[in-house]
Amino acid sequence: MASTTISQSLPPNIDPTNAPLAFGVRALPKINRELKDDTLIIRQRALMALCDQVHNPEKVHESIQVGCMDSLKKLLNDSDNTVRQKATEVLSIMVAHNVGRNSFLDNNVIASLSKLFDDEVEIVRRNCHLCLEMLAEIPSGAQGIVDAKLIPKLVEKLKIELDEVKELILDTLHFCMHVDAESALSAGIMPVLKELLAHDSPQIRGAAARDMMDVTVPLAGKVAACKDENIVPALVKLLSDANTDVKARAAGAIMTITITTQGKYKALEAEAIPALRQLLFDTSSETRLNAIKALTTLAEAPQGRAKLLNFVSEIEERESDSSRAVARAAQIAKNVITWKP
Image 1 (spheres, rainbow, N blue to C red):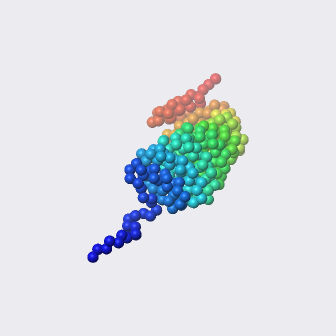
Image 2 (cartoon, helix red, strand yellow):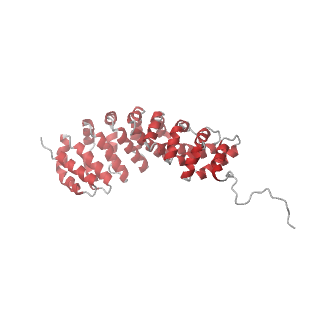
Image 3 (cartoon, one colour):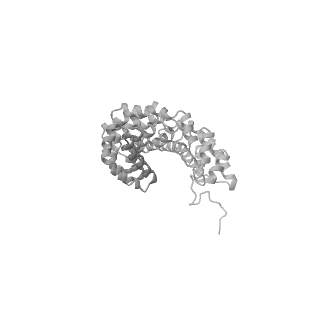
């Protein structure tokens, strides 16, 4: 005969780590209340549920409306490792959307995230820097990071962090230096980037060369690059790197440094012209473009023009390049090289 006793065991398809959701529009308000609960397991389950919810862009907007962003900001200071990990993971999903980035700035989440730069849990630090990298992709986000005076801290962490995190920091600094390159220069980024130019990872070498190009856009950056005897030779060495992105960005850095007279002669001493010449027929249009522009600046020096006069025919070949930008740059380069007073 059937028993009326109701079992207290959960069905086998129920995940005990997830909080039970309320129906419809009440789901996220309930999660937000549970994020503030004093009981650890309730906070953890609420974060698990919220992490699932915000993969839907519509839920990102709704979660912000009910106050989840402020709750997540407070959870960044939680003593539990899992809570901090899941809170930063949820934020990294939300900041991928424009509404999430705006909410980051409105709620000053940047300052709270910066406190996790020294967190003992590696994944927490990674999520933290992932949030900042995606936030920096918009001008207002990069400005927010600069205004929070985080550039010196990011430069310091660039020296000691894991390689995976270093890539994120280099990307963040790349966007921030479009706003304020001189702050990075004052923070001592130049020697750090010089070391990373010789890193084993092509992604880090390329990102370091790109950031070197960013920091040498201001005159002070060009002067600093020329003062160090090893920076320009290191960039010239990267012109023969096996990775296409590394070559393109190294050529771009040489292009910006050689705008100054001192930079031109540093590059000529490092035998940049033969290395750049090899890139004229590279498969990457970005590499060809940066190489031609770098050769153009070197042609403005008498010694550079004298050497490049022997290769005018190779420059002319690029005037019919499939890339209009490369073709135009080749025309300008030929005019500079063949110019006569």
